[in-house]
Image (cartoon, rainbow, N blue to C red):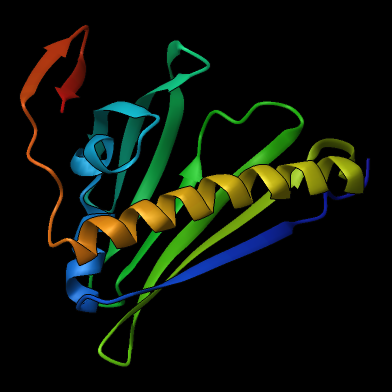
Length: 170
């Protein structure tokens, strides 16, 4: 079998807030359920001194799943968060990327890059994955911008742990 091609996608947004504040929101995965609608909870699976491993519970089509596990590496000096999805499903063979926050005028520019491989290198399949990534990335970037520009994430009403998964209700 030949080497699988690496496909890439980049999505960006300008945010009217200091880059450091934007990076703090991106880096603080515990607050993502308050920021990103399909996410319900975050479970920390470990930290090796460099990378953290987290699992997200999310709701898709009314069903709650805990099948999104990622390894994340934070670089506060460069305002970058690298990530790699652990539990990819066909047609995706691998998935990873990076959040980049840079100063832009009086605010920040946020780039969300993805790289992935699809089984059998099928360009039609890859195009479908690119469309899914685009929809999800733009939703996340818009939510990030709205949250940061409104100066904060809404306060959480309730927080509890069930079966090792931390749940936070708004």
